[in-house]
Length: 207
Image 1 (tube, rainbow, N blue to C red):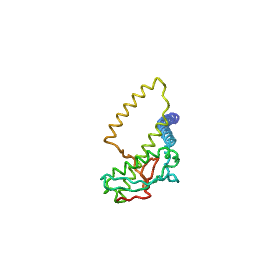
Image 2 (cartoon, helix red, strand yellow; image 1 turned 45 degrees about the vertical axis):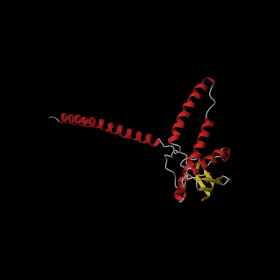
Image 3 (cartoon, rainbow, N blue to C red; image 1 turned 60 degrees about the vertical axis):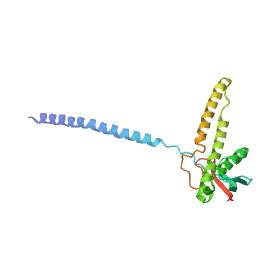
Image 4 (cartoon, rainbow, N blue to C red; image 1 turned 120 degrees about the horizontal axis):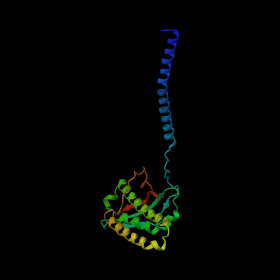
């Protein structure tokens, strides 16, 4: 074979090698480029942090001292109670529902047995029950305030819906009067969300 023919064969073989490597290089570029794109896309999605609930600095105190019979009907409890809401909760909203708050607190105490008031752990359970009842009062109030006035044509439908909901609510209350909070309650608090986060007994005595 002549030198010219040999060079031609070498050139053809080198071209094949270069041609064979090119698809591999392109494939690597595409894979690496695609991976980089997805990595950048993943970094771009930053999970929005939920606003942290904080305790208010000012305590809300009920001025009256209560004297309530316990569940046995023979023992009574004398106590004074205060509350610490979440930051931003208006004290005026609490004052506007003072009668409902007092009724809720009394209803918890009068359904409590004497043996369930003896230790700090017992009082902690009572505080959580009170907080749950008060938070339901304020949650219902906020829901009503946020509702828009319905149009005339929707009033009948709304009335019917409300009646059905009320019936369902009454049936549920008979076996689920005091719902428990699903979320874990932070240490030292009596509720996870509020607006009433902590309940204080300024005084608590049974006789």
